[in-house]
Image 1 (cartoon, rainbow over the protein chains, first blue to last red):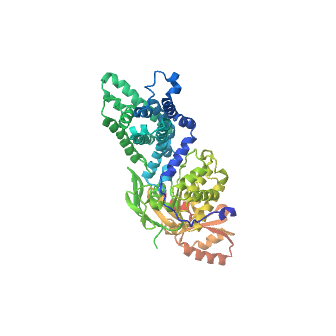
Image 2: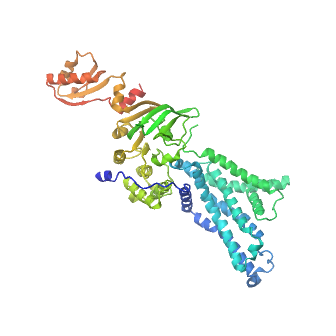
Image 3: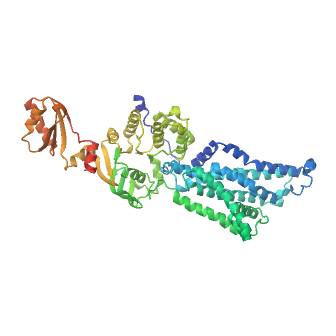
Amino acid sequence: MATVREKGYYHWDGQLAEARFPWWPITRTGILLAFKKKGFRFLFAGAFLPSVVFLAIIYISEHLGDFKLWARGSEKFITITPGSFKIFFTNPGFLFLMIAMLVFAGSGLIADDLRHNSLQIYFSRPLKKTDYVLGKMAVIFFFILIVTLVPGLLVLVFKLIFDGSFKFFLDCPWLVLSIIGYSVMLAVFFAFYTLLLSALSKNSRYVMILVFMIYLFSDILYGMLQGPFRTPYVCLFSIRANIEQMGAFVFAQKLPYAVPVVFSFLVLGGVCGLSALVLHRKIRGVEVVR
Amino acid sequence: MTAVIQTKNLSKWYGNVLGLSDVSLEIDKGITGLLGPNGAGKSTFMKLVTGQLRPNIGRVLIGGRDVWNNFHLFRGIGFCPEQDAFYEDVTGWEFLTGLLRLYGFPAKEVTERAVRALDIVELSKDKDRKVRSYSRGMRQRVKFAQAVAHDPEIIILDEPLSGLDPLGKRRLIRLIKDFQSAGKTIIVSSHVLPEIEAMTSRVIMIHQGKILAQGDIHSIRDLIETYPHMISIRCSDARALAARFVPDKSILKMSFGPEGRSLVVETHQRDAFFSRLQTAVVEGGIEVEEISSPDDNLQAVFDYLVVK
């Protein structure tokens, strides 16, 4: 028993530094926990598949002579333009993979904290509410940017390498900014979208279903309303369609739906605003009895 | 000298539910027991002191500074919540280091502190096990470790002993006392009176959101004049001793304990009784084996203040 007493108390004489990025430990934990989930690594790796395919298409487009037989008749299709980047970034399959990734990595971000009463542990430390939210958002930023921004820029670099000249870059120098801008906007939207739903329930499985179903249902609703109403404005109900509109605008391409892009920005911004409101109300250090 | 923690007219309510009402008190270094039944307002008080709740009325001051919205103060506070607050999928090590990083310690320091804290609570061997696999006692200990790992000046422990086996309780009580010896200010809440009694005689009694009493438990007992003091004397001849006190008008009631081996006296004048007891014992040649006060303990005081 005496040994317990001997190692009881220890005083630290060091200088306590102000944490420069107080949100980082939260982000770190979020990323760590995501990779601990069954099947997530597989899904994460799968999210790079569109980038690999895009890279292969770029390679083929630059070496058409070597792929004459395979690419016959589709030369026009595999000619790389800024529009190709828009197609890569906004194709429904890629967005679906991102949603699937968010289902695993993002649904429990706040829901698990609510379930495990972790908020009181966090907020009894020198951590502001904004640091906490930023930390959680950064988890989504990490996963979205790593499958959009990083491959997007790499693909562009490889395009220049395969091309052997800077012509493509000089023809559309804004493309880098478009890639960065679109990836960041997508990350911001998905971060707010996921955290909004994650803050609504203590049950992360329920949130998983919500994240997935709301995305899918918004698109189904668009499809259902399109027939009876015969107006392109119903595309505003679809998260996917709004993202596609945003992508087309950012990559300076023709809008896929005959609706002013500002409406799509308003819809996506509205979701972010609603999320901010819900986060503000739901994230408290303690349970509040009503 | 200013008290470490001061509350001034502190009140908190949740909608129609009163959490805490007009609490003004001062808490100094050492262990202070926060005592009250479930739902008395202990956790509300602790969450107000740790700055997690904003008071509706009043203030909480630590070192003279307002706690609310002053998150820099939280560096000096360690809080161990009553409920489990873990991710089940992380290991004890990950849980602890993750929380230590929030203080901005250098990486090396985080490791050293986590090692030391786990060592203190004797969880070093199990640090790489997932929290999911921890027993109730281990969970309590790792919660305690996160509260003290950053070397806080104020440690707030909400029901830290609940769910621990007797050995675990003894170890944790000893640890808490170690931190007291190191000059820390510790607030421990419990609804189990003997647990508090084992740690400190300085208590705050709370009931239905109000402070019933604060201070040394024996002094509090002395202040309760409505109920006479009970004094039990186990001696060789209880009846002879009783006979000597029959004419004493300050004695309200006398009774005999089991097998007539002890005399239980009720009086409002405890000090006067003890001086007369001395004379009676010497004159009567009675051998006294034990003198005790059955109602000079937390349970009795609490019962007097709350129930009756």
